[in-house]
Length: 102
Image 1 (cartoon, rainbow, N blue to C red):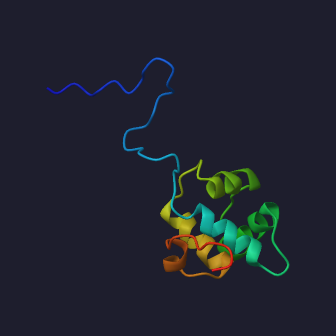
Image 2: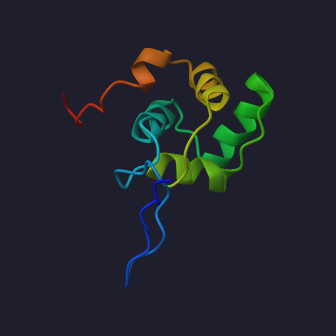
């Protein structure tokens, strides 16, 4: 039987298997861009409230902040609810974030 490599080294925090980058999701930057593009802009708390109204999904402002910064991974049903609530396509959410002004 093969031994799993020890992922804990001196001075390093434990790292989950499969984690290769510092970001835990691909859509966080796009979610933030879509939220701030609203007129008027939505706060994280307002997005949380709209998620509950539109998609019956309970995600707090703290969780949304972690998604936007890439600290938290996102389930597929959460991606769908975010796209529906922000009125963007799934394809757009998974596209590379566009630079401001382009």
